[in-house]
Amino acid sequence: MPKLVISADGPDARESWRAAFARVAPDLETFSWYDSGHDPSEAQYAFVWEPAPGDLARMAHMRGILSVAAGVNHLVSRPDFPANVPLVRMGGEETAALMADYVLWATVSLLRDARKWALQQQERVWERYLAFRTIEKARIGILGFGNLGSAVAHRLVRCGATVSAWSRTPHQAENIQLFSGARALETFLGQVDILVNLLPSTPETNGLVNAAFLANLPEGAGVINVGRGEHVVVSDLIETLNSGRLSGAVIDVAIKEPLEKHSPLWTHPRITITPHVASEASRDAQASYVAQSIKELEAGQMPHLLYRPKRGY
Image 1 (spheres, helix red, strand yellow):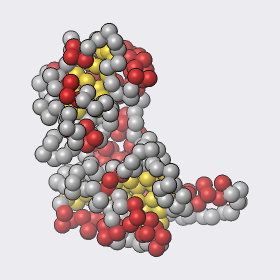
Image 2 (cartoon, one colour):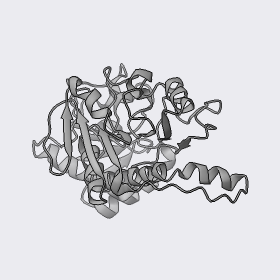
Image 3 (cartoon, helix red, strand yellow):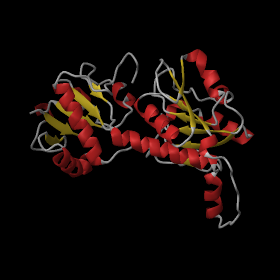
Image 4 (cartoon, one colour):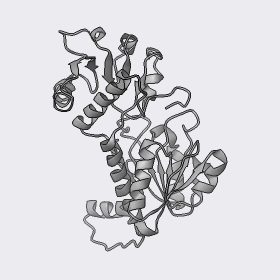
């Protein structure tokens, strides 16, 4: 039976992870990276988030590295990352369901202008501001149609929204209008009321959401960023909101996290901030996903969310 060494979330999380794996994968032998009685070289797999400098190099002998997050650029960009070892991104049904729920909440919040109600509550103002946009009349566009993007799109369709999606390469789906390739991006943007960014972080997508990009959206559109902080040029987003072209934004990710205290995103009246919580699944759900991924790797199979260097995600 293979061994899994866990460094995810640091030494304080060792007991919670140990308990989770004991509940959902009792046959998998696990130990903490921080246990003095074990050597990480004993393990064939590692479960990580932000390993200390040099720790990744100590995983070069392993059969797989599993990330606690869907984004892995912070790992593969490090000089100590062992490129020969398969890297699996976090996924699973609960992760996808949480993301779909979050985007549904954010969509309704933008449609009903809930940010204004929140500001009124802070000031103890009872003003019956009414918004009449319903999800059945909303045109929602998903940037990125991978594991999470497709889950979000299908949830919104079931709620009655008109949903389209754009991806780098073609896909197929029922009840969703699909666009692909750079030439189709402008057309896609021009017909959505709420834009949901779920793109991965690549050289092509970093800084993509800038002033010229946002100018393609219909006047009064809203933006939800649950992709990467690097995607959005913050100054351009704020300028577009101030001009009135955008009605609002919901932001769950930042270039530097925690979001810096001086960031203008905190106080903008048209922006709702959440602290990177859109789709972090429970300990048990993540442990179950890791155990299943290890079974697939042991069987010589490729997990669905295996990192592919040529794609950049």
